[in-house]
Length: 336
Ligand code: PHE
Picture 1 (cartoon, rainbow, N blue to C red):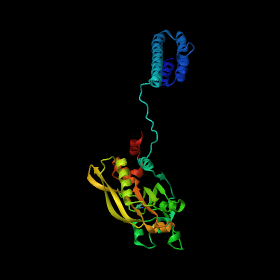
Picture 2 (tube, rainbow, N blue to C red):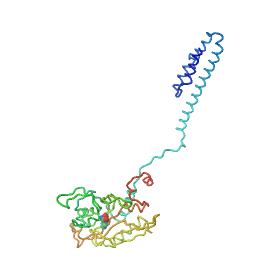
Picture 3 (cartoon, protein in one colour):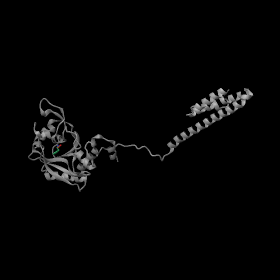
Picture 4 (cartoon, rainbow, N blue to C red):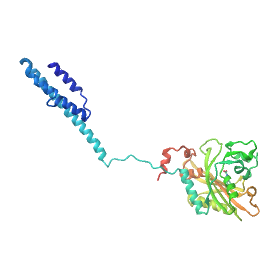
């Protein structure tokens, strides 16, 4: 009898009561009227008188132990399920944030630029990113083997046996779309052309092998340099505010004559500096000839803006690589 009691004590101490189901099994097995403890109690009567007192005392202990374990486990199960319910019901708990997608700073900048030019009377056109040599260079007055081609380190997609003319390149600028537009549409033309361009350049904080430009082309009769500069200054004021500081410098491009560049003053934590945002100029007569327009009567201006630079200035980003790493901590700053 005593050894049976010891056995049961051991079993009760080790019972796993971690679920409602196990708790119920425990109750049926030990505590119910037909359970093991009650049936042991019934056997006490059959014991010798000298054993009875001891066995009774041990049996009462055993019963108390089983009841205590049962009550305790029941309490624990109840309070943990209470917690589950209250967690579900507590509508004041903070909600896990969900992040909606947002426009990339480059896309935003490009959109703002497009809006400005739409207001100034331009439409929006597009062209291919893989270009042939003719559109990317030759028609833009870069003669074959001319050192001006070195201004733009080029990724070649296909080198042709037949010579430069049939080479395929990743476009090094958006200017080839000028050629496409002039070949397709008779003047007047007033378009901006946003898009990606590629150059085989060393990656630094200021330059990347892929970036974005927005080309502008205005072709009509009697277009003047004054109109070009007026257009660029209006753009700068609408983009950066009327107190923007800018300067226009003479420059060189094979496809414009005369050529200029425009800088914007950037006041950053590390001190101020001029940042070049675009190249521009009056369309060179050789370009008009290449597309079959009469340079005696046709005039025009063109510009090519660096969208990345304009975005960096706009948002105070001082490393161009930031725009291509897609770090979520940067992108989240642009969700609205
Ligand atoms: N295509 C030139 C560049 O990428 C910029 C430019 C465009 C200059 C149009 C003049 C006119 O550097």
